[in-house]
Length: 62
Image 1 (spheres, rainbow, N blue to C red):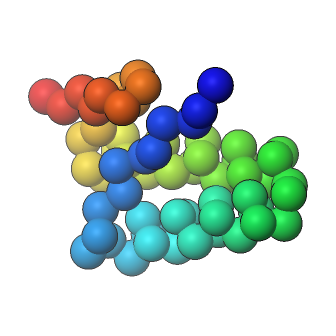
Image 2 (cartoon, helix red, strand yellow; image 1 turned 90 degrees about the vertical axis):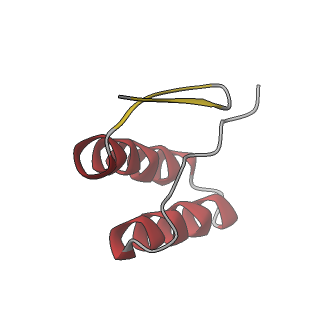
Image 3 (cartoon, rainbow, N blue to C red; image 1 turned 60 degrees about the vertical axis):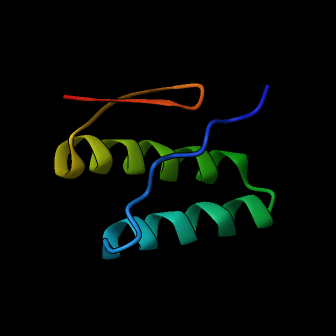
C-alpha cells in the first residue's frame, strides 16, 4: 500500500518544514517519526489550509 502524498502548499513555510522533516525521517528509515510528522502535517493542512480529508490521491475541500 502506498501512502498518499499530502497536498503541501509550496508557499507555506510550515508546510515546507513538515515536508522536509517527513522526508528526512523516511530517509533515516524511522517510520515512527515519519508518521508523527504526517499527523502534524494533516493537522496543519486541516487547520490552516482547509483540507478536510485525504483519501488515496483525492483531497476534499469545502
